[in-house]
Amino acid sequence: MNKQIFLILVASVLSSTVSGQKINDFFSTLSKNDLFNGSVLISKSEEITFSKTYGFSNFEKKEKITDKSQFPIASVSKTFTATAILQLKQKGKLKLDDPVQKYLQDFPYPNITIRHLLSNTSGLAEYYHLFDNVIKEQPEKNISNADIIPVFIQNKTPLSFLPGSKWEYSNVNFCLAALIVEKISGISFRDYLEKNIFKPAKMNDSFLPENRKIKVPNQVELYSYPNMYSTNFVNIKDQKESFLIFEKSNFYGNGGIISTALDLQKYENALFKYQLLDKKELEEALTPTKLNDGKIASYRYGEKEIAYGLGWEMYTDESNGKLVFHDGSITGLSSILIHNIDKNQTVVLLSNTASPIFAVSNAVLQLINDKPYVVPVQNLSRVYGSLLENGSKEKANQLIEEYLKNPGSYEATERDFNRLGYQFLRLQKKENSLETFASAALIFPKSANIYDSYGEALLQCGKKEDAIKMYQKSVELNPDNENGKKVLKELL
Image (cartoon, rainbow, N blue to C red; front, side, top):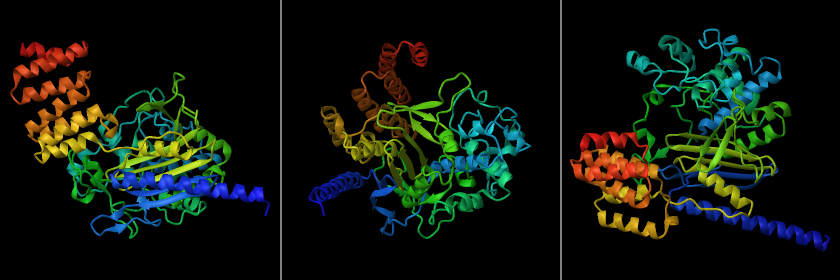
């Protein structure tokens, strides 16, 4: 072998080893700090460069996650629904600007098109409270996609906005899109996915269950924190769902697919090699949607602006390449499939403890491109709240003092502290609530919202004079705080 070629190969292997070690160290640190429990896969030019699992699929039985462990992928499923619709479009079976009524005749909104569904610009109401009356009248009923249109008609549910005028995330859009796939194909959505996506992409460990409550042997258990101040995961089977519809429904199209990290990488490979869609249709899916006024349909997550195409999300900042993705989240589960088109890199993350998926994936993308990255850290409000709950007020205060000296040691957000304070208040843990808001005021001294919340908590605890001071501080920081002005007027 030519010496120069040999040295290049050795350098390549060493580089890969070092990179793999860095990635493993990164996820090992997250796992140790309870910030990641799940499956990781990274590929470059369709070749897997890193694949590993961390933690347990079943905490109670101490069963470890393996490459064969199957996860619900939640809203990553929306990319499959969009692919199914675009396959039918490619075959001339539909047009994206066809009205939904053309295929679902009873659909009561004539101005909503298939494109509106796939781009989340329809104005349709989300399903969280749509079925409250149905559940009350028929408590044993298992609600599914076929029940959506009848309840819209029965309730005469108004649209949130004119179709195409705004962007608003709605699971209902993709449930209806799945119904259209069934109507045109003449088979169940489950069978359509199996025949037209799973099999062609060789996704042997992926399926859409008939009943998502019935688990297969390799399927992971899901875990989450039961409250804002807990530091111990609890199986979601032992927790109450935040919305009743989650316990009473079996929707599909919006989510529901069960898969593995390896299968999702196979899906991505097949998709971007144009084995599932032609180039034209795939580019349509990955192009930001334009609203009626010409603006791009987008939302902000932290400092990043994210545009929405047809069942796919994309960062508007393309300085590091065009990044397209979809994330997913349900109680006890977070997922993301992200692909850098320009660099041909893919990252798949599946976590059965609802890890901070955006922060982790962004750090991984930086890491694999040898750029500075930040390792996600533990949530300050959660650790702080746990100390208060356990009667360690002194340690809790010390934690805040240490954080103020070294803000990078924990993640702290105004929103989390606000939610923690109110949760303590709702549970009649009044002293803990007041301590939380007092600490939040130290961390976020310029937040009018924190002082407003602190004032409300003091008032509920019978501390009127202290409440007045907090409301005054809030109005001073934000002269437009009408609530604060109203309360002060009543108190003074």
